[in-house]
Length: 171
Image (cartoon, rainbow, N blue to C red; front, side, top):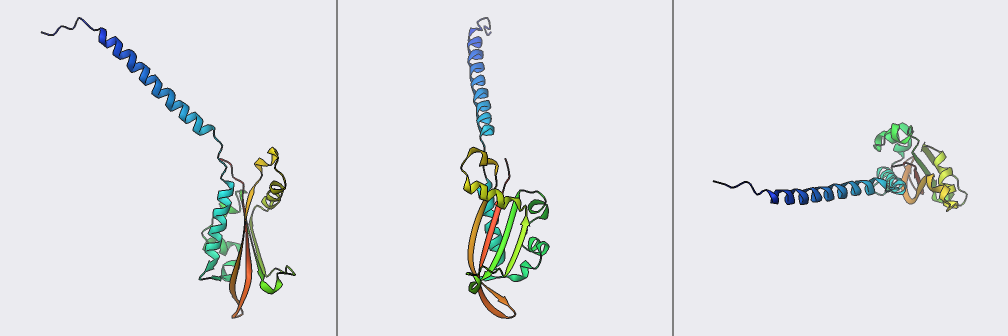
């Protein structure tokens, strides 16, 4: 027959079980609180990824495909960009400018395409000019300049593709 009259050990085990359970709960809660209170700024990263995606779409085999730049809709469809995200959300901006090599000094633009929120260009300029705490909510832009070859009227030409992308999303 078992003697179950001495149950003092159960009280001690329950106390330590409660302390361990409380420590795990407090650690879990503190971890979640610290993770959610940190501010993550991914605007520059988004802008750079968008610029890279646009460059990869436009330039194939070291040549610029001018057919992609016929219209905004065609460009967005062929490059896999969604209109509701780029144009309608107001959080992104894309500018593509193509200049022939011989027109670089005169800055004569051969082809230009603007998509998204044009206000981000001004925000990026203000952010770059100011280091104040007030500029933390402004958009961030990425700039790329790529030397490209392209065909016009079956004639091979050389030029510069300037890609400006901007992002202003908040997490």
